[in-house]
Amino acid sequence: MSNQIWWDIDFSDDSMRSSLQNNQIIFSYFDHWLTEEQAFNHQFMTYCLALKRRLLDHYRVAEDRFLLFLNKLAAMSAVLDPEGGQVIVEGDLQNVFRDVIREQRRTAVVFEDIQLILSPARDLTHVLYLFEGGVGRDVLADYIAESGLFILE
Image (cartoon, rainbow, N blue to C red; front, side, top):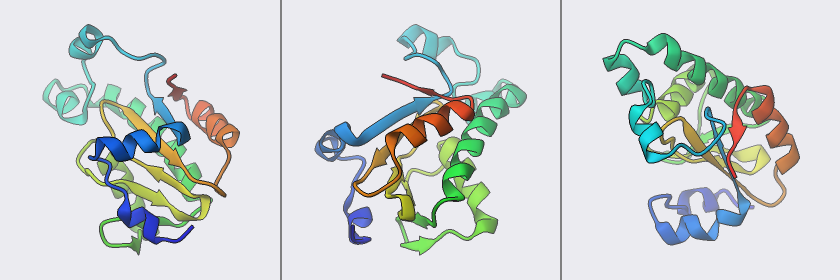
């Protein structure tokens, strides 16, 4: 697949997300889809909320699980920034991953060698988009589980 596909995907476009739906994995810190009430009452749903409520220690448990998973992916692939098309250097990688998890970065992250895109986070839940020729769904499911995260159906 040409690198150009990465720059053509607009995750704010409902029709684009819909066309990729069959090739996605939704994974989360939570083991089930939260009801509206559960989400509203959750004490550290976002980094900003955890910071405000002084619950960063609780939030970091979730963040560490996501970092473990994303670092497993990064060990298999160059990581690209779709905004500039540049490889994200190792020294910046953890900051980029944290910004994605904390919803402070609204662009996707591309794992080029394994044909995978991580979309921006929402409430400790992420979407992976898989492309032909990339890492298998079973491998990703194992990595997600090993990291203490859950696939949402």
